[in-house]
Length: 230
Image 1 (cartoon, rainbow, N blue to C red):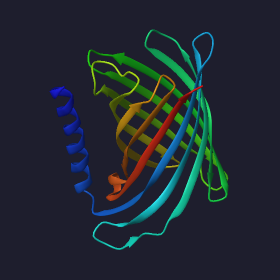
Image 2: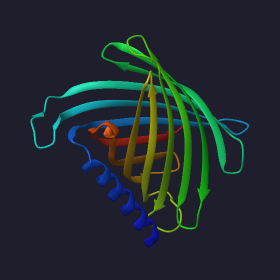
Image 3: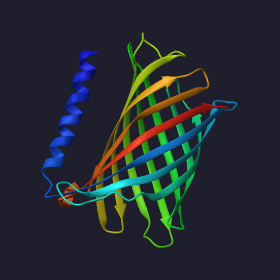
């Protein structure tokens, strides 16, 4: 457990170091609730339906003015189908539609997931590509890698009525026309397994991008996730 804690601390310190090299820092803070509906199908297939909404509560510059006016940002509806292709791996693909400022955004998603079940926790690697299209912006192509650790807080596995810690660390490469950007995400979550069909997670979704051109943007979202097996 000490090794895992040390790794978490190293990640946080590295992110904070990246933040300090930027000349101008802006931020936004808000809420990011989501509902995930999961269903297992025959022949190792499964399907996930997700609804996620983003609400902005405050934005501004560090050591500068702050705008505390509430603003609805967007809502995402996604449908992802996955198939198990190995003992600990699966491939998935799907579609996301986004409602933002009265306009529609379309996104196509492909991903490959590997899950490692270690002695005291579970480690998941996700490799994802997506393509985003809308009428008012040029197409955006993204390549993402996310590593997730799920650590039981009671015993060696997560059972009903127990808490667990989940930590996501993601690196997102974005290409839009001739522009490139890198976004780093760190998402620590405290989860609770209510029963075999329902889980809830609460934590902070922290994102930093545009630091490559010294115009760093920070996003802090209060993440509240519901998972329901149907």
